[in-house]
Length: 179
Image 1 (tube, one colour):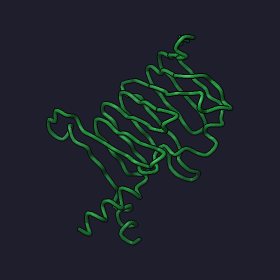
Image 2 (cartoon, one colour; image 1 turned 135 degrees about the vertical axis):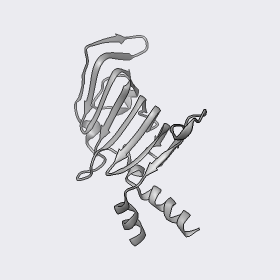
Image 3 (cartoon, one colour; image 1 turned 60 degrees about the vertical axis):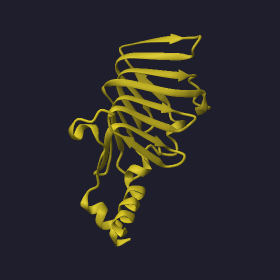
């Protein structure tokens, strides 16, 4: 019983529980998107970027083959962006949660960030890493507001590839036991 409580405390206090919390001024930084080409749809308020896409805003960086930006580009109003969907083989996400902390890195074939809901979805071959701790599965969902991380494996499990895997380095386990 104590071991289960310890594992639960480690998961909650793990760097992965702080994932996607951005540096305070990231949302106020300029937005830069570089790609081979793009198309803007005025009716749906979407811009699609194609080919070696690099999305940057503050410490946030997304690399993808294709990125769809839903909403308006209004730096003074972060809520003008509805969501961002990035796809690739794989698409990559990186963001620094706090000053003097290592960046959070996420990889998946599809990354979806629901801006207003403050939720990051990593879909298909997903993994999340920070400071030696890692979580992988077929789907990872991070609810920023509630600091809740959920992971799931594939429904058709074939060996370990269909399961969720979490790795916590020994130094993290020791510091949790001492607390």
